[in-house]
Length: 498
Image 1 (cartoon, rainbow, N blue to C red):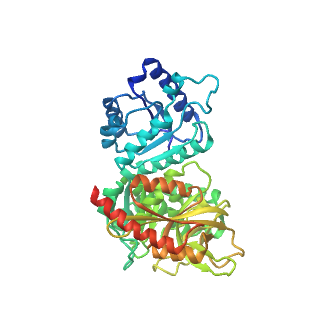
Image 2: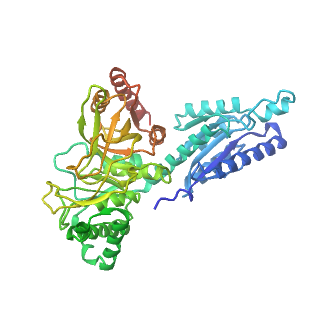
Image 3: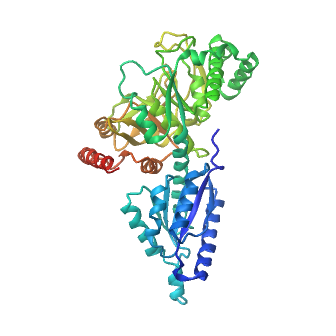
């Protein structure tokens, strides 16, 4: 469902005619070597396409125009091989709507002490050519990522790989369609928000659909397809015979096929539902939602369209990476003097991509929503570093919150808790992390990821032009409060400037 290999990043090198054709030909040859090396690197999941060296304002404007209109172009990597007077870039950068990465590198890694001369110096001027470009982009308040280091270094390629994945996620957001099946959970504040402003800022659209728009597909579900899906359940999960033969699991399979038909026909990449509005569904979708998330769909419970959009975007970012990414909710605490923990879960809807074990397929009462006992996958998230990310409408603008956490294996079995779950220690600790989260207005729904790191979300916030609050090992409450106050002034001023 998610294929990053068809997407492109364009490699654009800046120079000028002052140094003659010999220098320009050498700059082009070097740029081709770098771009081809990036393109062949398995770490970078998209195609890196060499573009001719640009030396005039007209050429720069043209390449930016082409990038804007290219469906597969995710953004530009720009590098100044020689000195490139930055005023040439103004008109191109003014219209550029795709993400920008400024690569500050040079072709050679070492100074050739015995042979260096002025010809070499004129050719390899990135040290000050990129500073000229950096001034101009800062002067224009142009959002971009700056990567510094030799192009053969692994850390440089890793940063480019992350940025390219984030650019793919950002591109996905531009045209994403989200189906809000039913409405918001009644009286809940944080899952609401300005959908018009969200479409202006991020590009995705959110529209409501009644349950009848979905359940009208129930009667057309093919019995053979249901049997095939049940066989797939039996192969992929631990299932007791009584569960496999139950009407409840068959009903769950019918719901999955119904949801897939609705989402496919509508071209939706993310959706929400709510237990308060299930129509003729016999049970709250559990295993259906879990499997749809595993296939890359975004999801938000109780009408949470912002989390659904963020989850789909992060699913695109992490396509092909180890680890998993899931809808999540902070559910209950385990307080200890030596280190308190959070038990994350939801009623049913946690993505199995975050576990290393073979999930159990079980049926249990839900005790909420007034429907029949739903089928769900039960498992523990694997141990390791992770992040929790929340996208909220703070009123007048959007804010991202991120908490770095360490996921751990539960110390004890949870025989009476038949839901998928994750147990983690927040950084710097539960007390500071939770206080920071609440002060910043973070939601109780998050996207939990063991494959996405903080750098991904930093790049995303830069591309989207939105506020990011990071809660990590260095967080202090006093500093966080100051940052929130400063951000209020900055983003208010920034909106007025544009």
